Length: 88
Image (tube, helix red, strand yellow):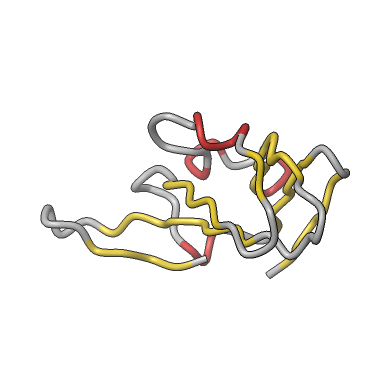
């Protein structure tokens, strides 16, 4: 998870997921803090969430401007191979 600054001087959190699976998987959903903080949901189109990923492929998702990195406690990543949960 990292923050980027844009021309409008606002901070926006971006989540980048990198596949470490040898077999291709499809990323189906990202759930932040078990869905309990609404300002930490994906911002804009989420068409890249149904992307097939092979080893080393990356997918980035932008979050609402009101979501800060410090707001993210848990990140659930759903794929066709199952769910992984990461805590920070």
